[in-house]
Length: 305
Image 1: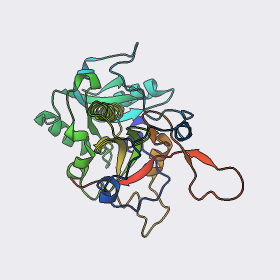
Image 2 (image 1 turned 135 degrees about the vertical axis):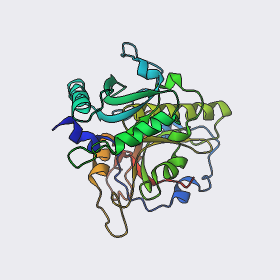
Image 3 (image 1 turned 90 degrees about the vertical axis):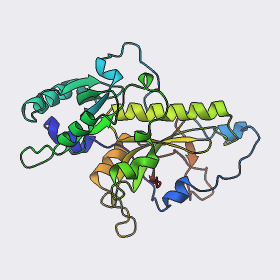
Image 4 (image 1 turned 45 degrees about the vertical axis):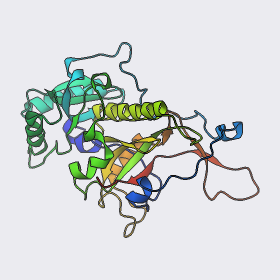
């Protein structure tokens, strides 16, 4: 399949296998459940086992031997992301097509954490007028009657070059940035917080927030529409922005868009502090042994700003 035809399929990633009927306020703004102040027992901890492949890459400021480029310190526009064994070759083809057929001579390939992306531009700030103009130009670029780069996104620098929080990646701003109709749902793929839900210290909360923001940055740099969300003592990472065309439980229960199903394949789990979370399957009954599974990623409502 030509590289440019993959743009729409690869622009958003995430997974769900749960029906999302909760409102955004119930999902994010409800009162916290009472916590047991006692440390988790061995019985509690056996529910959490590292027996699944990681969904998010390890969060580090740099992987030994990883190729770095001058773009690592800048914001850039990701046109398309390639994963898998042939990502280098596919990205090279994507760059060629973007330059020749797309009229974007400044397009370049860059190895990120898990993907090789076709990118454009290097900007010091996300509110750089040139970045905004270039993104609009690229998204509306028409080739053969189509807009193949309509899902291009502005990706942040590598985490070590960032200081503080990033409002552009805050889930609370998703509706304002993307529009309410597009940003009804998103896919939660990671949680950072204490396993036993006991009160966290200020230092722990700061670390959870740093980890969630770094994970969202890494995913964005790999070409995925990722967000972070900070609750009182826990932080979440989500991917994708989905509207009624992707998921509408009232009139089309069980029907999901191709983008949402693709996201399901890429992010099958909801990780807790980077590890798979083992849970009992709801509704499992009978005299036999209890049945467990690794907790899947889940579709949640996008909060109001």
